Structures are given as C-alpha cells and as structure tokens.
Image 1 (tube, one colour):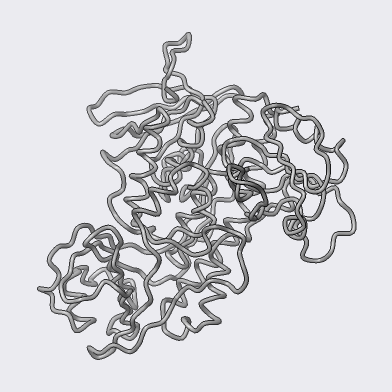
Image 2 (spheres, rainbow, N blue to C red; image 1 turned 120 degrees about the vertical axis):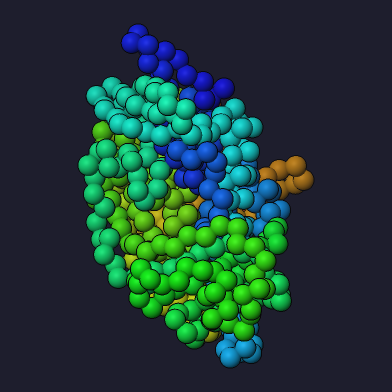
Length: 499
C-alpha cells in the first residue's frame, strides 16, 4: 500500500511524502507517486471531496496527463465537448456562437479540444484511481503546524474527533488551496491580490424551461452578465453571475438573480445544489519551494475563472513534481533535481495568471466568439505550447536548428507511427507510463538502463516533426535532451538517477 506509514524512533508516524489537500492537485500527485511506489499520505480538512462543478473545463494538455495516469476513459465517458454559446436579450435568442475554437492546423494531440466535466466528477475519478493504486484520502484531517530540518518535515495534524498526530515526511506538498495553511505556516505571502476583478456567484442548479444543447449567456443583463451551462452526465446547470461592484448588500439569492437577469421565473429553479460567492483574485507566491516543502496548485497561484486555466495549471504542477520526487526517492537522483520544479512552474504560472486575468475581464461575449477570436482563445488556453526551454533540466545539444524546429524543453508531440498490427500506433502509446523514453529517430540508440524505454523510428513523417537524432523524453512528456551524440545521453540519465 503506497499510503502505509511507519514509526520512527520518536514514535512519530513516518512517510515519504505528505500531501495536504485532496483537490485535483493533491489527487493527481498522489496517483503519480503511487504508481511510482512512493509511500505518501494525502490528507483533507473537509469530510468529503469538493462537491461543486467550478473547474469544469479540461484543456488538451491536461487530458494528455490524465491519459498517462490511466483515467482518460473514465474522463471521456463522464464528460462532453463544450456546447455552443447562446446569447439572450429581452427574452429572445440572439444566436449561437463558439467561445473556444480549435486552432488552425493539427495540434499533434489525440485530445485537440477542451473537454467539459464537472470538477467534482474529475476528483471522484482521480480518487477512484488512487484507490486502485493502493492509496486513499484521510478526510477530517487538518494541518496545525509544521517544522523542518535538513532531513525531514514534521507536521502536527488534528482530526475532527479531537485527536492529534505527528507525522514525519521526507517531503511535504501544499495542495490546500488559496488559503493554504501550509503557505501561511511558512510565512510566504501571495503577491498581486488586489486585482480589481468583478465579484461573482457560482452555483450548481436544476432548472426547467431551458435546453441543454447550449451554454446560455445573458451578456447585457441588468447588474452584470449571467450564464447557465448544462453539465454533462447530470441534470444540473452551472450558474455563474458577475456583479458590477463588490457590494456586501448584493443579493446572493440564485433564484432571484436568475429571475432578474433573464426571462426565466424564479420558480423554474427547482434546486440549488451548492453555491458560493467569491471575489476573484490573481495572486502568485514568490517561490514554490521552501526547504523540503513545495507549493502546488492554488496554494502557489490563484486564478480568476477566465479561460479554464486554474485547475489545469494546478494538475500540471503535480505532474511536473511527481516524477521528480519519484526519481529522488526511488532512483537516487540528485536532490537538486527538485530545484527545477520552481524553475519550471513559477514562470508558467505567472504567464498563465496574466492570461486568465485578461480573459476574465473580457468575459464571455458574442464579439469574442468570432472564428478568429475563438481559435486564438483555444490556442492560448490549451496549454499544449507550455514548455521549459530555459530549465536547468533541459539540454539542447544540436546546432543550427531552423526556426520553428522542435527543441529540448518543448512538449514531445504525439505523432502517428508506422508499423504492423500489435505495435504502438502513436508516440504517446510509447511514452505512456512513469518512465523516461529514449526516442531514436533515424539513428541507432545507445545502450541505456533497463529502466529507460527505448524506441527507434525510421519514418520521414516523424522525422519531419522531430528532426533526426536522439530525444530523451521525460516522464511528463517533455523533451529533456535532444542530441546527435550518443555520449550526451548517459550524463543526463545519471543526473536523474538512471545512469
């Protein structure tokens, strides 16, 4: 069992990684560590997983992550493509349009479009996967305090029944949201909280008299825009409304707002399943690591709900950190490998934060749904272009590359492969799993550790996209090393514990 713990000589429970917070970030990291055989504990202050639909859009890159973690089939079965937007004004339909469009050309991914699935269902699927891998969530457990040394982190935990427990871990990961108890315990303050963004109310509702083929929007409603989006696999709609000002006297009655801002009557709302009023923030922690403690997800960066970036960026934090912890704890990689987590993810979070803030300000209006605007929005938000060319874990050893060529640090594209029945059909079928993959295109691969998967390709179509040479693909699907010289491979593998 990956969640099993031991006792140290002081009588404290020990584990390798303690994860605080069982949202999408914590669950993703726990699944990734579990499949690597790393002992971890995942604690959650609440008595259950988050029940709302808030982070309902999975970007293409996140879908690739979930494919690798073995939950893609469940995610696809429980979700659906985003429906077209339908504008309303004065009780009349003003026409359908698409908020997000697929960028021109092939994105070289089997998941080219954003996928809609309620956040609660995504978390449920990840929880089920964690259980399959031998782990689980410890609910009703909160972090009171922590202290760390050069060797470990000691956390004081409290259970709802009043009992206290001390847990010692090699590393601790804060995945406990924007009000992170871990971040506060470390004394790390977020930067950029005063963003001046309009407050909003979001809820999951059931409503009569509205079709489920469209995402309904009232962009010119009195008091602010309002949206009702049908949630796949349920009878619910996600309701969201922005307010012109942050007025503490503003009515937060969902039924009343729907009746005021649309042609629908309050009585059409048959159930309000959950609701939350919030002031969006755009905030970033100045560092994602403090000794043996890492910040991930909303504990490190808080996004307004613009462009569906918050949950997706958080999942990819976990995916980036998981393999690095695994290499250090299971394969003897140099601990400095963990420094690359902040080096890679902090700049990405900062850039995505600017994007999500801008998209939240723009809102969902018909004029941003033109074909060109929709395609640009899709290209900006799908996160397939996120890369780590400047990372200390990136080595580009080839000279005179043409402009636009794939480089080390880029996401390794998914390309169809030649071959007979029974052979991998696409490169992602080769990459899938917790291992490194050495891709040899048009050249002979050197002998490497048995823990590295080697795959040779002699195909013009693949070479046109990658180029010829040796490409060492990291477990998170990025090219770590690109070279023509076989002698470059072993030093890189040594640095990650595979030499």
